[in-house]
Image (tube, rainbow, N blue to C red; front, side):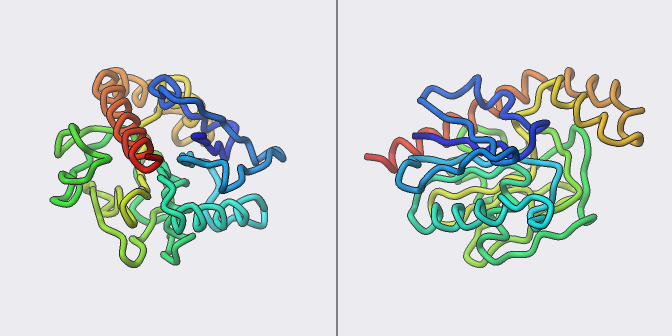
Length: 227
């Protein structure tokens, strides 16, 4: 079964759900929901959240989630981490996640590395593509990890560990409603809501196409792994 971990009530799966063609379960550990058992997971997607990857004091479930992520990777189960989900992957594998470094908010370009161009997750995606960013923390690349994408402000946009575990810094899943919700978190972004939404609408088709291709590619890896 494909499991999706939603870490924050205001950071839902968004367009990812639209592109799924396999049975899936969304777990909500932030309000007491249980994490899945490793034996039940055929693939795992971990979403973002307003908390930090090391904020276990305020969000105790993160400690167990990191343990699960480590076991998923060690078992070769396909994993896709988005923003916080990518940061949790990095921390689970011993890398650093730093706050207030390489911050990005809004519609920005991402550039695939030479390795990223050849990577199965990014198959069919242009070398330079536009996506949505909303992060104040950022990850280092774990040992034996491969850098797959960068941006002007944040050199570590995507990485892979092994053959089927990926961490992304950017948000392919956003919708207008999600962006409006995140803008309301702080006054500094609330006053820019319409500008963020307008930029999103200008790139909405490209956003959706990228998200669809990423999900399709991830599902293809998961299907191959289960055979």
